[in-house]
Image 1 (tube, protein in one colour):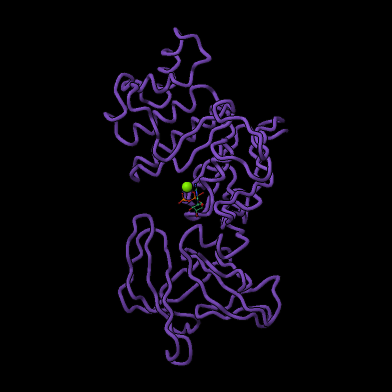
Image 2: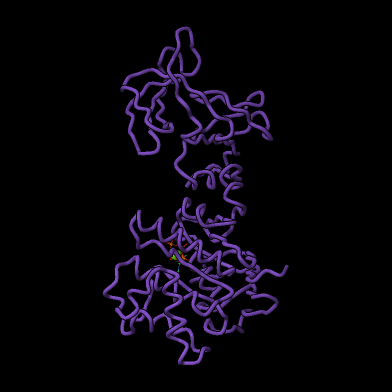
Length: 360
Ligand SMILES: Nc1ncnc2c1ncn2[C@@H]1O[C@H](COP(=O)(O)OP(=O)(O)OP(=O)(O)O)[C@@H](O)[C@H]1O
Ligand SMILES: [Mg+2]
């Protein structure tokens, strides 16, 4: 099946420096793809190039079989059949809510535009505000209107840039849930930009992780979370404990246990990443003398508890003091000073060559 949107070998420079570097990405009908990466890695620039808001310098943009941008020749955004939603909603302040949504419906006869716009507003639960003006709405309400406006002409492609960033936590989860259902119903190909890994996992069928203008890993949320290909990707999906070490007899010794180092050679310098949820702590039974840690503080975060631990490497508690985090489900709040036994979950531990070791 031909992808609906295709970015091919796109490189884009500002002042001579590449901010998008040989980026290729395909999105099929009905698919939601998230570009995920830290601030400044080139996400918005990539989206603007896909939309045609930026002049393409190198590569191609295709919509279906149609070439919509090559260097020196490109179709303007309004002729591409795309729906755009940006971070700041960008509603027209002088138009009412319903007129904002009707704005993109020029292909419909004038008499039908209002009815169609009202139908779109109903889909996002905003038909009651049809005759209000944008400044009379909250951020979340404006966001829904912006979305209704983008979806109204039934675009085959939807481009979203950090569309929930102006919303508070509760509203954000509600709006993004609504948006996901709307997008899936519409069958459009969606490219969404975010720097929030959890949001990307919530929304995306596929995530492309970007760093310094390049896609460093692409796959389903499950693949990226369970099989990150670098410390950077692992660290992007939540806070991690990181240790450096060296492979000896196929293993790396860390202050909290031995870790298998598959695919690496003895003598290799490595970075070991342990997710806090992969570091479990249990009550120490008499006679157990394997890896232990002492509780510095335990904090309830709601659905889980975060336990700050310290451990001393070396004999009898001498040597370096290490500080790391364990995340336990539910309420688990051991007293400060308690000694606990450490268990590692191999599925939440990753070992990478040290040269890729930078977490952020
Ligand atoms: N018009 C421009 N002129 C010069 N430099 C630019 C321009 N637009 C973006 N940049 C630079 O390009 C780089 C990538 O910017 P971009 O907005 O694509 O990043 P981003 O990944 O969307 O970041 P954020 O998460 O903060 O929105 C940044 O270093 C930025 O300063
Ligand atoms: Mg951006």
